[in-house]
Image (cartoon, rainbow, N blue to C red):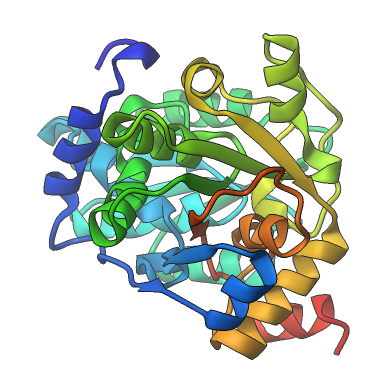
Length: 322
């Protein structure tokens, strides 16, 4: 895989074989109440049950386990607001090496503590004034570490696509697939899998209203930067789509829906009360788009990815107004 156009269904299937037995094959749940509210048959892929509590482990392990023995021995670096941080930290531990993770100073405490708990060294920066890519690349170079970015890597994209591949293998053909969008790795991999299996499947991304960089970019036909978003969905607080991910998504993604923070709260509450699922704000955004009817002409059979559940009890209660 040397270019974004070469991230194919075969690459996603190869990644699935590569992570088998290490990453979890997460469950697909149904809810009659959800179906009635949405007006469709909804199949919910629960990546909140993935190792480290989010889909990110799929891509992180797929990329890390392909490093040379020398690279593994020297250690791994990453930059992340939380879930990719934990994923790389755990992948490094699985491979018997160390990880150094660059994280925003305001990363939720539960994510920071979990990352440290996997044995990673944490270096912080201010997400509103610092360039995490530049800082992360400099950190990796200075220490001689292999850098695994959260989405700008073909093995990461292919690894993330295994969630959609599993979903479709279990449910059969889907008319639409609804996926949260941050930097674009999950939807790029998901779209590659879904369109590769059935070109007619609509792939719809979901962003917070305050973080609509991918929607603007797709409409403009080029990558657009916005101010760093302020949203409860910290995992989707990207200000510019990735170069690799955008190249994939502009070919394969059919549209982007936007949801408000309040709609995300409602989706988190629904998942907890009616499906007994704990989902973080970023993980709930795709479900929020369905519940808030933000997707036009919703077809009959719809898959939705709950991308993660990494949220502490205190923050969960705070967001839901308890």
